Image 1: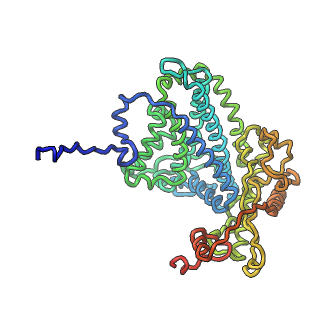
Image 2 (image 1 turned 90 degrees about the vertical axis):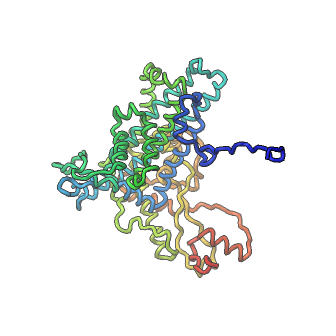
Image 3 (image 1 turned 120 degrees about the vertical axis):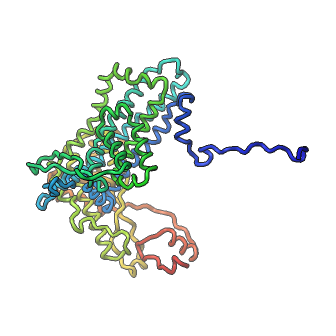
Length: 510
């Protein structure tokens, strides 16, 4: 046993948290934090986060314009999270939800939908542009940035500007939390509404409902959420990134906590989490993070003036989508019975295809009216990210007319109908296109543009625009591959196409 034939084996290696789960232990990171070197500002990660979020906001608006199901579901989610849904002391409904006041009620909901679809595009696009500029400046001055020296002036100014924009960007999600958390279906039972003397008074007073006790998990969850939406001294002292991290930890670790967070509220927390992560990256940029507040005070007026200029599109959007300006739009957007019925999951037949086409046409008419109101109120918003998006060559896919299966065997299957993201903006004259987008580059072939017949306040002309655009079909030639029957059967199994027939159950089990 003591000979060289049986050498002493080394002590087994104890795997770290990263090796077992792929992530560092939060407890270990907190214990080692005082002994670690100052972290570097990871602007590539910041840029990646903001780029992804900016793309997600654009896709959200695209889906609202393309998918009637998605549009109707978003309206219902916003309705369920408005404070008018909370009953008052006497268990009575809010006057705005009563029969005969549907115009006021849905006007508020549709106004929320439009604000929440347009404002984040402007916000995150601007933050993404600033993060890209910061990364380029950091790369430019990489050789001269040293902890013993001050930052280059242009890099410092861009850093302060980005920090100020992040602080301002948090006000949107924090304000949303203040409105939607107490009204969310899982937490609504803990709150009550003060009765209104004037049914048209928009301000609503909410307070905790007496006689209902919360568990410890519910108390901790509500306390963290209240700390965020009150945006007071507690949040200032604890710092936003720390509170958001603690909230996410509570939701993930405490049993039952996730049940009190609706998907709508989770989306707001997600937006806040992205902004807080960007702020955290600035806070760990030592030693310069210690002097950011002081440096900002020295140039506060310049940065506030710059923010005010960049925020002008945000103010115009909020003014354009006020309740009293959306009367005609609300009539077209209310999800009354059958207006947005979209049975896309059903087998295709003439009846279902007609329902699909009718829902898509109704949605196109609504957005044509929204674009008309938006353009009339905002005019030429030079540099607006929303206007640039509406001019992008994104196409909405629409359902073609029904063709009988017998005729389809003889004739070529009609391709899906495609139309521009905004029929209204693709009908604006070219000289206004250049002024609004700041570019001479055409984003859409001239043959696909639908021309407006005038810009009046009548919704019938918006219907004409949607009808004209619905008749436009873009040719998109695709290559054809010959396969045998077995391969064709496999492709039909994996790539479901409901245009012709549903796949038989025996084919799935074969």
